[in-house]
Image (cartoon, rainbow, N blue to C red):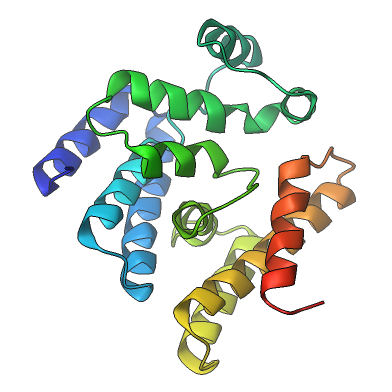
Length: 208
Protein backbone atom coordinates (compact mmCIF):
# COMPACT_ATOMS: atom_id res chain seq x y z
CA UNK A 1 0.00 0.00 0.00
CA UNK A 2 1.18 3.51 -0.79
CA UNK A 3 1.77 5.58 2.34
CA UNK A 4 2.15 9.32 2.85
CA UNK A 5 5.86 8.66 3.33
CA UNK A 6 6.02 7.02 -0.09
CA UNK A 7 4.20 9.94 -1.69
CA UNK A 8 6.63 12.38 -0.11
CA UNK A 9 9.52 10.30 -1.45
CA UNK A 10 8.03 10.36 -4.96
CA UNK A 11 7.56 14.14 -4.78
CA UNK A 12 11.28 14.47 -4.03
CA UNK A 13 12.26 12.11 -6.84
CA UNK A 14 10.06 13.35 -9.70
CA UNK A 15 12.46 16.19 -10.47
CA UNK A 16 14.53 13.50 -12.21
CA UNK A 17 11.68 12.65 -14.57
CA UNK A 18 10.01 16.01 -15.20
CA UNK A 19 11.08 19.33 -16.64
CA UNK A 20 11.34 21.69 -13.62
CA UNK A 21 8.76 23.99 -15.23
CA UNK A 22 6.26 21.11 -15.17
CA UNK A 23 6.57 20.39 -11.45
CA UNK A 24 3.92 22.97 -10.36
CA UNK A 25 1.47 21.35 -12.80
CA UNK A 26 2.25 17.86 -11.49
CA UNK A 27 1.76 18.99 -7.90
CA UNK A 28 -1.46 20.67 -8.95
CA UNK A 29 -2.72 17.44 -10.49
CA UNK A 30 -1.99 15.56 -7.27
CA UNK A 31 -3.94 18.17 -5.30
CA UNK A 32 -6.85 18.06 -7.75
CA UNK A 33 -6.88 14.24 -7.61
CA UNK A 34 -7.07 14.41 -3.83
CA UNK A 35 -9.99 16.84 -4.00
CA UNK A 36 -11.86 14.82 -6.63
CA UNK A 37 -11.38 11.61 -4.65
CA UNK A 38 -12.82 13.29 -1.55
CA UNK A 39 -15.75 14.63 -3.59
CA UNK A 40 -16.45 11.10 -4.88
CA UNK A 41 -15.88 9.51 -1.43
CA UNK A 42 -13.20 7.17 -2.78
CA UNK A 43 -11.30 5.19 -0.15
CA UNK A 44 -7.84 6.18 1.09
CA UNK A 45 -6.01 3.36 -0.70
CA UNK A 46 -7.56 4.32 -4.06
CA UNK A 47 -6.88 8.00 -3.39
CA UNK A 48 -3.20 7.38 -2.73
CA UNK A 49 -2.88 5.26 -5.88
CA UNK A 50 -4.32 8.14 -7.89
CA UNK A 51 -2.10 10.70 -6.16
CA UNK A 52 0.88 8.52 -7.06
CA UNK A 53 -0.39 8.34 -10.65
CA UNK A 54 -0.74 12.12 -10.68
CA UNK A 55 2.87 12.58 -9.60
CA UNK A 56 4.09 10.28 -12.39
CA UNK A 57 1.59 10.92 -15.18
CA UNK A 58 3.87 13.16 -17.29
CA UNK A 59 7.15 11.42 -16.47
CA UNK A 60 7.97 10.76 -20.16
CA UNK A 61 6.36 13.91 -21.52
CA UNK A 62 9.68 15.35 -22.73
CA UNK A 63 10.81 12.26 -24.63
CA UNK A 64 11.23 12.51 -28.39
CA UNK A 65 8.82 10.49 -30.53
CA UNK A 66 11.47 7.93 -31.48
CA UNK A 67 12.33 7.30 -27.83
CA UNK A 68 8.65 6.62 -27.03
CA UNK A 69 8.40 4.19 -29.94
CA UNK A 70 11.64 2.37 -29.16
CA UNK A 71 10.76 2.07 -25.47
CA UNK A 72 7.25 0.76 -26.12
CA UNK A 73 8.42 -1.71 -28.76
CA UNK A 74 11.07 -2.94 -26.34
CA UNK A 75 8.27 -3.57 -23.84
CA UNK A 76 6.32 -5.51 -26.45
CA UNK A 77 3.55 -2.93 -26.54
CA UNK A 78 1.43 -2.73 -29.69
CA UNK A 79 1.45 0.81 -31.07
CA UNK A 80 -1.77 1.47 -32.92
CA UNK A 81 -2.20 3.62 -36.01
CA UNK A 82 -4.17 5.97 -33.78
CA UNK A 83 -1.22 6.46 -31.46
CA UNK A 84 1.16 7.02 -34.36
CA UNK A 85 -1.14 9.70 -35.76
CA UNK A 86 -1.48 11.45 -32.40
CA UNK A 87 2.15 11.41 -31.28
CA UNK A 88 1.66 13.92 -28.46
CA UNK A 89 -0.36 11.26 -26.64
CA UNK A 90 2.40 8.64 -26.70
CA UNK A 91 3.61 9.74 -23.26
CA UNK A 92 0.52 8.27 -21.60
CA UNK A 93 1.53 4.74 -22.64
CA UNK A 94 5.26 5.12 -22.19
CA UNK A 95 4.61 6.88 -18.89
CA UNK A 96 2.50 4.02 -17.57
CA UNK A 97 5.13 1.41 -18.44
CA UNK A 98 8.00 3.59 -17.23
CA UNK A 99 6.23 4.15 -13.90
CA UNK A 100 5.69 0.42 -13.46
CA UNK A 101 9.34 -0.23 -14.36
CA UNK A 102 10.67 2.31 -11.84
CA UNK A 103 8.15 1.68 -9.06
CA UNK A 104 6.73 -1.84 -9.52
CA UNK A 105 5.84 -2.09 -5.85
CA UNK A 106 3.56 0.97 -6.04
CA UNK A 107 2.15 0.79 -9.58
CA UNK A 108 -1.11 -1.06 -9.10
CA UNK A 109 -3.77 -1.46 -11.78
CA UNK A 110 -5.47 1.78 -10.74
CA UNK A 111 -2.32 3.87 -11.23
CA UNK A 112 -1.21 2.10 -14.41
CA UNK A 113 -4.62 2.38 -16.07
CA UNK A 114 -5.13 6.02 -15.11
CA UNK A 115 -1.73 7.08 -16.45
CA UNK A 116 -2.24 5.12 -19.68
CA UNK A 117 -5.53 6.95 -20.43
CA UNK A 118 -4.98 10.44 -19.04
CA UNK A 119 -4.60 12.09 -22.46
CA UNK A 120 -6.86 10.25 -24.91
CA UNK A 121 -9.47 8.74 -22.64
CA UNK A 122 -10.98 5.51 -23.93
CA UNK A 123 -12.87 2.88 -21.96
CA UNK A 124 -12.56 4.57 -18.60
CA UNK A 125 -13.25 3.75 -14.98
CA UNK A 126 -14.12 6.39 -12.39
CA UNK A 127 -10.45 6.33 -11.31
CA UNK A 128 -9.28 6.89 -14.90
CA UNK A 129 -11.65 9.84 -15.15
CA UNK A 130 -10.35 11.34 -11.91
CA UNK A 131 -6.80 11.63 -13.25
CA UNK A 132 -7.97 12.79 -16.68
CA UNK A 133 -10.08 15.55 -15.15
CA UNK A 134 -7.50 16.50 -12.51
CA UNK A 135 -4.98 16.98 -15.31
CA UNK A 136 -7.49 19.25 -17.06
CA UNK A 137 -8.69 21.43 -14.18
CA UNK A 138 -5.78 21.68 -11.74
CA UNK A 139 -5.41 25.21 -10.43
CA UNK A 140 -2.21 26.26 -12.24
CA UNK A 141 -3.70 25.72 -15.70
CA UNK A 142 -4.69 28.98 -17.37
CA UNK A 143 -5.71 27.81 -20.84
CA UNK A 144 -9.24 29.11 -21.56
CA UNK A 145 -10.73 25.62 -21.97
CA UNK A 146 -9.15 24.49 -18.67
CA UNK A 147 -10.58 27.52 -16.86
CA UNK A 148 -13.98 26.87 -18.45
CA UNK A 149 -14.07 23.23 -17.33
CA UNK A 150 -12.75 24.06 -13.86
CA UNK A 151 -15.55 26.59 -13.39
CA UNK A 152 -18.09 24.20 -14.93
CA UNK A 153 -17.16 21.44 -12.48
CA UNK A 154 -17.34 23.71 -9.44
CA UNK A 155 -20.69 25.11 -10.55
CA UNK A 156 -22.15 21.62 -10.98
CA UNK A 157 -20.66 20.37 -7.73
CA UNK A 158 -22.10 23.29 -5.75
CA UNK A 159 -25.44 23.91 -7.40
CA UNK A 160 -26.65 21.07 -9.62
CA UNK A 161 -27.86 18.69 -6.93
CA UNK A 162 -26.51 15.80 -9.01
CA UNK A 163 -24.76 12.83 -7.45
CA UNK A 164 -20.95 13.14 -7.44
CA UNK A 165 -20.59 10.44 -10.10
CA UNK A 166 -23.02 12.32 -12.34
CA UNK A 167 -21.13 15.58 -11.83
CA UNK A 168 -17.94 13.77 -12.83
CA UNK A 169 -19.54 12.30 -15.94
CA UNK A 170 -21.13 15.58 -17.04
CA UNK A 171 -17.83 17.39 -16.58
CA UNK A 172 -15.97 14.70 -18.50
CA UNK A 173 -18.43 15.08 -21.38
CA UNK A 174 -17.91 18.84 -21.43
CA UNK A 175 -14.11 18.46 -21.28
CA UNK A 176 -14.05 15.91 -24.10
CA UNK A 177 -16.36 18.07 -26.23
CA UNK A 178 -14.00 21.02 -25.84
CA UNK A 179 -10.97 18.83 -26.55
CA UNK A 180 -12.50 17.51 -29.77
CA UNK A 181 -13.63 20.98 -30.88
CA UNK A 182 -10.10 22.29 -30.34
CA UNK A 183 -8.57 19.41 -32.31
CA UNK A 184 -10.98 20.05 -35.19
CA UNK A 185 -10.32 23.79 -35.09
CA UNK A 186 -6.58 23.16 -35.38
CA UNK A 187 -6.89 20.46 -38.04
CA UNK A 188 -5.51 17.76 -35.75
CA UNK A 189 -6.10 14.01 -35.83
CA UNK A 190 -8.65 12.79 -33.26
CA UNK A 191 -7.73 9.58 -31.49
CA UNK A 192 -10.56 7.03 -31.55
CA UNK A 193 -10.30 6.57 -27.79
CA UNK A 194 -11.22 10.22 -27.33
CA UNK A 195 -14.31 9.81 -29.52
CA UNK A 196 -15.22 6.62 -27.67
CA UNK A 197 -14.94 8.33 -24.29
CA UNK A 198 -16.98 11.32 -25.46
CA UNK A 199 -19.78 9.08 -26.75
CA UNK A 200 -19.71 6.97 -23.58
CA UNK A 201 -20.22 9.99 -21.34
CA UNK A 202 -22.82 11.37 -23.73
CA UNK A 203 -24.85 8.18 -23.28
CA UNK A 204 -24.50 7.71 -19.53
CA UNK A 205 -25.38 11.34 -18.78
CA UNK A 206 -28.55 11.05 -20.87
CA UNK A 207 -27.56 13.96 -23.09
CA UNK A 208 -28.71 12.03 -26.16
